[in-house]
Length: 482
Ligand code: SF4
Ligand code: SF4
Image (cartoon, rainbow, N blue to C red; front, side, top):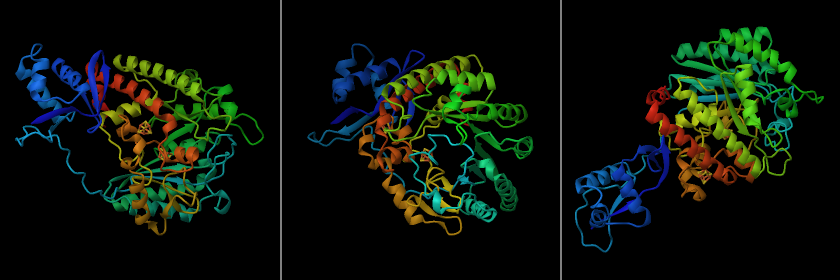
């Protein structure tokens, strides 16, 4: 006898209509009235087809119920199984998931090259310099040499498999302190890329203090994407983003940013904000960076730190931050429905992940399609681990230690995170950033459980935005496929 059971899902509204996020397939699915009734009936208990007919027969014609059940089984919102004690009978509908395919090696698509570990600022919260530093800067060169940068480029191409496009990102310290080397590395990357038939998409992150006109010329000419680390207006920026003598950096940064934004019109220039307990005015920061300065997009991340630090965000701070994120998400929706571009990148990034149906085996690409290189050529999980030794995956001259990489990925698979196994948000979260986990809990294996309620609430909000756009502006969602 067949028994139906409700699958794993999360219910939400899109423009007032019922939707579900299906955890096994990471798909968004709109429910009709009969499907809602079937899922409500299955909410409490498992039922047989006969039970369903009795429960719903007075409200819907039976063919409609049958059709709804078949569709729900097809999308894995409902599981159909044979009751163990029942006599053998053919199963009309099978919801058995396919066995996972053997894992293929993921080619490298993004290499983040730390061209220097030195910085001209002394931001208190910086993971490179701050109290939570995990890298061993003392036994590494502070600047990457030209030779190591070229070897990094060779490594990137060698590990990129048959990818036709590779992303080369320069990072620091303050990246522009080693402008000479990054400039020659990019020229070399384009030259080698042309020989190999691969395109190179280049970008860098900077604090913008050293953006001289000739550097801006070069960024524009070479089509280099730029992300500026910046925390808001003068008061907000100067709380933590200070020079070594304690002087704030805002006055030096802003003219450079204005010049860059005026000149770099071919590629979007983004701002990346670090939120701290003392700087949580998300709306005010957004208004200044997006609306007054004109950044193409603004993304926010809470500071990565252990909870003891005085800039660590506490529970009420996270709640206030979430409320403001939700207000900006409402604005994003309103503007998008009106055909206007909103610049809050956190919501756009999540919408894109939902739309692409991402179901992550690992929280991010670190150690898979993305790796970081330290100034001495050591290859690590990502830029934040570059130079940390214990998280090394090889070197640019010897390549990736694939045994180590495979062991890391096997150990960190979402299936091993038992705390996450019942969480509906796991296809998108998968336990969260390894660096955050290492800083908070001392191990990359631990899911970031201090964020769970936050992540689920934020994902729920983004699903509502997604559902409303699906109803009222589906062509916008299609644009996220590009
Ligand atoms: S870390 Fe928390 S929110 Fe993320 S998947 Fe695990 S349980 Fe869910
Ligand atoms: S481990 Fe964290 S910092 Fe590194 S790529 Fe992943 S999310 Fe980003």
